[in-house]
Structure formats: structure tokens, C-alpha cells
Length: 380
Image 1 (spheres, rainbow, N blue to C red):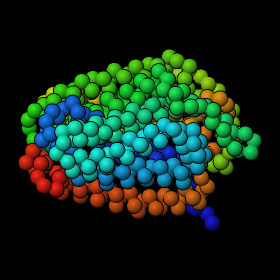
Image 2: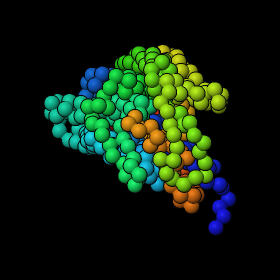
Image 3: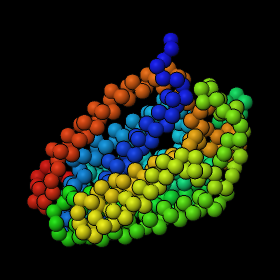
Image 4: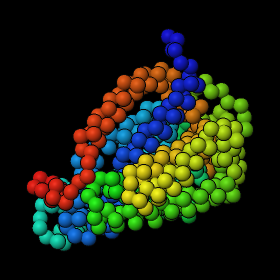
């Protein structure tokens, strides 16, 4: 059966679609993680903390669809990437999962007792549930940019030789801090547009401004590090974009600055890092003036920063630091032609549905939350 889209086109489409799903998660659950990270610092009393918690309480569960869909798309579109990354980063993902589990438990149990110690403990649990995933997601991207210690033998069996401690290297930690700062800005921007004017909003705006400046500093530092250090991979043999999935049919070299060459080949890609800086600056201005510009800016910044990783690495998805020739790329680690096409049809049907109900939820729940509403019976 001849499909209406050729194999290479589908590979590129799915590279873009997986990126869209990751950006969708950063834009939605990203502000939930940011708000949780800010909770102990912007809210001092129990009423203030309930105000912060209930600003995200009705919506955070629905945002998990982006994380689940992204993981499913990774499994179906790039099975090699899914197998190696999920097994290699197993302990790191376990830490993320453990932190994320604290969030629903914290929401449900925090207000079950009047004890100050009880509630404070769950507040810090919610903080961990926001801060740790934000940090680990950035650390993971930092390690991917450097190359992951895996190899693939002639039978296409993968072996991973890294460990959890090895993931916490200086560059990866810098990326992790940039991720935390980015989501804190997004969370602070959400609080500025969602909760009533008062001390909590003012504190959120102040912390958000600091975080916005840190995003610019960390993001710029990571870019300079990326350009100056011996990071970057380049394919030195011709590849057939329509070829079958076999990561060993190419030659790859490690080359300093290679991650920046795409911006010369495809000038339009410069829009991604530009959005990262411009969005952060807009968020700073919006937070300073306590306007909705902050949320627009933080959304643009998150979009640009996440997109810049994909733009820099294309066509690489998961480079290998042990055997560069075994690196996984868009061209040689995708699922079959038919699988990608069927998945595309499913995506075209269901992603608009997800976007529609997400927009409806935002419309229904839009408006500033007051302390009286946040502390009413039945709230978190």
C-alpha cells in the first residue's frame, strides 16, 4: 500500500510533533511545578498557602495528559530512544516519579487535619513535587546535549554504562537550574494573573523577576558553554532519510560547536533561542508591572528554550558519548512507515480534542481566586 506521505516526511513530522507535546507539557504542567516550587516562599500563613494551592488545584491533573501522551509518542515513534533513555535514566525517572506522587497526595491530605506541623509537612512535600521534577528534567536535557553513555552492538542490543551520580555533572546542573528558573517564572506569572491582589501576589512577582533574570543568565551561560566546550555531534557520511531503522549505518564525529551549525543551515531556527531571551525579558517586565504580559512572556520563553534544544540537535535525538556512531537520529531510529502514518492520523484527531477541552477548562475557571474562595469547604 502506497501511503500519501513519504517516510522521510513522516520522520520529520514526528520530530516536530514530539517537540510540540514536550512544549505543551512545559506550558501547562510547567506552571504547576513552578507554583509548587514557590509555595513555601510566597505564602506565609495557612490561608495564603491555601490560596496558592487552590490556584492550580482544579487543573493540575488534566495537565498530565501532555506527559503521558509525550511518553507514549516517544515509545511509538522512536522505540530505540524510548528503550535506551528510559532504561538508562531509570533511577532519575524513579526520583521524578516519587516526587510527582507527592503532589496528588499532598493536595488530598494537606487540609485533612488542623495541625500546623501536618500542613507544613505537606507544603514542603508539594514543594519537592514541584522543584525536583523541574530540576531533573533540565538535568536530563543537559546530559542529552553532552551525549549519553550507551552503546549498541551488531545485534542492536543496547547497553548503558552510566549512573545517577554521573548525571549530576556541572553542565547538566546548569541546565537543571535554568529549567527550575524557567518554571518558577511561569509559576509566578500564573499567580500574578490568577490570584487576588495582595501580599502573595507581590511576593510572587518579586521572586518571578529574580527568576526571569536568572533564566537569561543561565540560558546564555549554557549557550556559551555549548559553543566553547567539546560538545556537539556531526554525521560525516551520507544518510538515506527514507532508510530503515538501524543506528549503526553511519559515521559520527564529536565536534565542538556542532550543536550550533543548524542555525547557519536553517536561519529560521534562530527564532527558538530568540524567543527564550525575548520571552524572559517580557516576563520580567510583566511581573514588574503585575500584568498578564508576564504569562505571555513566560510561555514564549518556555516554548523557545525547549524548542532550541531540538533545533540545535537535529537530526540527533540521543547521541552516544561512548560510541558516537551508535547515536540515535531522526533518520535511523524511527518506527516503520506505516506506524508513523497511523499515529499521525490518531494525533490529528485527538490533539485538537485535547486542546479544545483544555481551552474550555481555562475559560470556565478563568478569573482571580480570592482567599474566601480558596478557604471555603471542599477546597484543598
